[in-house]
Amino acid sequence: MDSPTTYEATAVSPADASFELLPLRVSALGFDAGGETLLADVNFTLERQGRTCVVGPNGAGKSLLLRLCHGLLRPTRGEARWAGGSVAQQRCAQAMLFQRPALLRRSVQANVEHALAARDTPRGERHERALSALEKTGLVELARRDARVLSGGEQQRLALARAWALEPRVLFLDEPTAHLDPAATQAVEEIITRIDDEGVRIIMVSHDMGQVRRIASEILFLHNGRLVEHSPVESFLDAPGTKLGAAFVAGRLLW
Image (cartoon, rainbow, N blue to C red; front, side, top):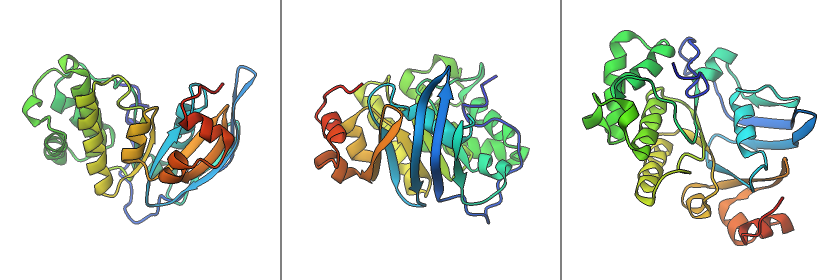
């Protein structure tokens, strides 16, 4: 069975559409592990609109930040607070994808239907919603194929279909194209754009500055576990506001 972290498989009641999930307010967020501070005093607010890319060198705390915001880890200090809803509603209203999706030993369609079942989606709705998500991600003709024999790009599209079928309000993406070739990367980016067009709030980690320019509207730049810049994408890429930001954009490795 998939880890619950793949798409929040914990069985909870469907989210009430009446509550406001966003904005997300992160205040004095910190996380320690093994006697080391991995994130320290991170503060920002993500509004209802926008596409956020989290960038920074290896070890900056990007993936950790996503896990804390998504609720997969409990912060050592501070908080990541959604605007409203119960914990169960908040979980139902978001989804997260990782670099390498964990797929079940069953068909492509069954993978999506399993995620819907884990969210207590009525049985009569699962088939239609799964096929709709596969259609939107270009996988409907592969619906009965064993998910584990898909190519890397197809597997990531299946992970996106599985998340999209859950109708999240916020989608966290942790380097979803890190191991894909250019064609597969383009296909995944097009799907992310379509998900955004449906009003889903995108929060994504990426090392690809070209991809960041194509997708992001705003940047969170982390370095050594601290938030250095939070700015519009054009400002960050074309005229960073800090020396660290300028060094990163110029391609100088920061530790």
